[in-house]
Amino acid sequence: MEMNDQNKETQNQLIEYLQSYFLGVGFNELKDLIIEKNNCIMCGTCSSLCPRIGMNEKEPTLLNYDPECSTCFRYCPRTYFPEDLFIKQLFYNGVNKNYALGYYQKAIAAKSNDENVLTFAQNGGIVSTLLIHALETGLIDGVLLTDKDNHWYPKPTIARTSDEILSCAGSKYTIAPSIVPYKDAVYDLKLKKLAFVGMPCQIRAVRKLQLLSPLSEEYGKFKLIIGLYCSSNYSYDLMKLFVQGQLRVPLNKVNKIDISRGRFIVYMQNGLTKEVPIKETKKYFWPGCQSCRDYAAEFADISIGSVGVSQNDWNGILLRTDMGTSLFNDALKAKKIILSHAIDLDKIEREAMRKKTKVPQIDAKLLDTIQLLNISDSEVKIYTTIMSLGNATEPILSKILNMERGELREVLQKLKQRGWIIAPNGSYSAVNPTTVINDEVNELKQNFFKNIDKLKTEALTKLEALYVKNNSCQLRFDDKV
Image 1: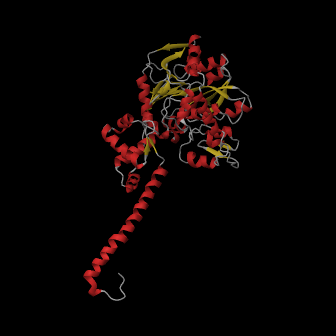
Image 2: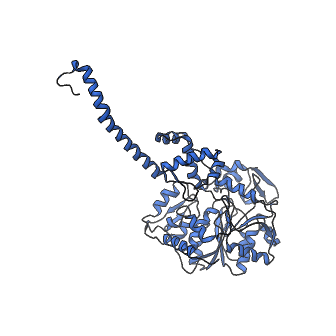
Image 3: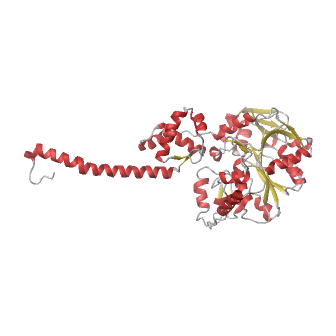
């Protein structure tokens, strides 16, 4: 797709932000706003771009002084990511637009036509097949992937051969700093054309790097981004404490782990399986996943998962960009892929909608405090729901909140008038609560001082006159009235 003037302007806006080296922020701000708020996803972007930042098992850490160059802050996937601008850059007007799924050109089911790939694959082997095809046709010369050791501990790596790609096949179900090897791909291996496979949240960092890499103008160009469907990811405690500790399955005896139809399934090397309801694993969810609303990897070139197909050895696929569609069609033409149109798109949409509309409950103490502003329960609930969703249309809000459209519209209008929400394009967004509360406090102050003036100038004067008139015989010379 040739870039038009509008897209060029969009790209320039993004580049201008990514080149803002002197924002006056650094790792301390990243720690305060992202890491300590349990919003870090351990993608490894910050430590890959800055030698002063390291990674432990739980979070990035500062190893040396902080020059406040702001690189870690700007490229973090959880900081500024102007979705509208990236949408204009990646997609054109003719693609399907879906609130839950994002933009896509085509939804299909497929599986690899290579028996060797299917031996290693988690499901239909499409990820591995596309990567190998991209490598063999020269589209890429390396892939950032996540491998594992014998104890299922994640190992971010760079694959440069088909065998290395196949060795990384299969879902790990453990949070991993998959972008850490990016610096090695640039500085040590000097790879020019990269692919990335990862979670929806990680892709936001990779899109920033694709647009403008702070490490090199020549090396490390991302040509292909494949996203995996993700409802939530886990800490390594899932393996260590749950699989090995509670299920009593030694990690070095695990052959495969899968989540299917509401069950968490462990396949052992001896052919036996153990499975439990997925709800038993929820306490191991990674904290940073709780605020993520992207199930279907909306900013990938291709999004792939096992949902939406009738058999586990197939993949449900959303072809999004021209790059993704072109690669898939080329692999199909080369007979490396078997295609099927038997895909349940509604099922993928339901899963995506469940994640996108996940709204945290307001605790009673917070509700009581906010109601000091003389605001109703429904107004608070709608405001915090919009805040949680990022943005939402009236029909979506009506469905989530189970409210009649008329009642909802009335409350939305009140919130707009108070300056708590805005709706520039028919989609409602929450105004920053700092602005909201400060405005409300200022109004309370103004009203308070107005009331004081009224008490002094109106009520006190009249009450004094009334008191003197009826109690003059009790007044002494030195009484103050």
